[in-house]
Image 1 (tube, rainbow, N blue to C red):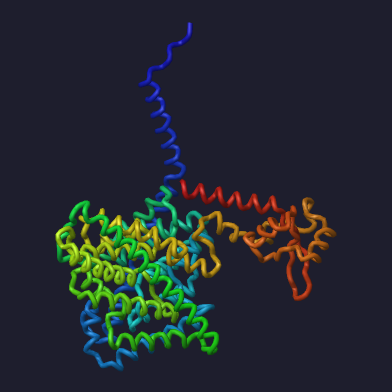
Image 2 (image 1 turned 90 degrees about the vertical axis):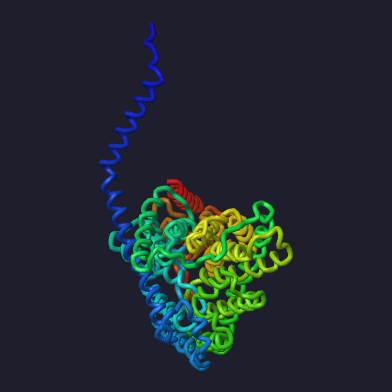
Length: 560
């Protein structure tokens, strides 16, 4: 006679008991290290938060000193009363200082920003350049304080990366830990800079780490909260922008208009990004043709900005005053059009001159102006079925910014937190989704990923495209003399036929040769002038194994 089966209740009780036992075992073995990691994340969040706060206060203090105003929130209005030669001179002197700093402390005269942090997360185990990063912070501080037309989030994000890199080197963090700590620092810095804890955490996950792994969320959230607390202790819990009109949406009837606005904002965002890349190409070409020293390039751009600012001082700095005026509807139609166009030109000049700063704040301004233009036209044509024109400015601000960053989730949240208005989320989501979908087809997904693509770093296509670039042929090859090495004579003949790969080359360069030549291995050489010394052979199977392991590790991290 067989034993009776245990009841369903008994089965569930046994499962619960085993789960508790396993949980207690994990807590004893890994709990202390996890708590320690969260404590490190908290400390990084505090340091990064203070760094972002001091950077913001430093910009305001330097702007006040240079332009002689007591309230930098109304800098553009105050600048209209300054002598024209002072408005012209300040960006020139600022650009000259930026050029000297970058020429001295960077190898290429280029300011580091969000794109470099994304590259560090993907390819450098969460590390970024520290010396160049500190120089970029100083250059961006001067740029934003002396008339440059960019935003502060780019240098803030990279500055956070410098903080986490210093910690990672001290604790010898591995790749997963390094990326998590980098995400913590970025979340804290963004949260402290914009008083937006939810958006700060999402920005780190969506833009920098580019995944939403569960294991990374808790420490990143802790760091984001720490950065926000630091901001609010100094500046208070006040939204950056305030809407003067209620969020009155004419329900479903008006949603098609917000969809159309999103498509227009996608085109505007693409135009803004392409204008920046065009200005960079023109700057490179002019610098090469005229053989200009690279330290002079930012000063020339500063002179161009100064000339533009004499007639239109609203292009100076971050542009929050003009953005706030657009959100409150305090601009005429032609003013909004002209300001949006000139801001795009000013941002392109600033980036083309390699002066410093970020692209997020300018995209907020251009988006708010674009939305206001659309809203003024829409409410004028169909006043009975449309809400207030400021609601379109609100949605346009998010739509352009989301398309530029390639981050619809975090941008939607940061716009909500910057304004404190959560009532028209449906309209904003429609505009953001449409603009992001369209703009991502016109560039390589976002401004930052397109920047990397222009440098030959293929992150936009995903890990299957960029992981091959992480491995050098010399690190994967079988050295000569190894018992599994290739035949030396065959390797010599292949080299004579031009069929080989340099030891410093990556698997990204080697794999197409395998596909084209249809061989089992390639000789690996070290080039010394005309001589090519064979040091080993890269087997196709070894390259595929290394690539497969990297893919598996990436998938495990993203789903852990």
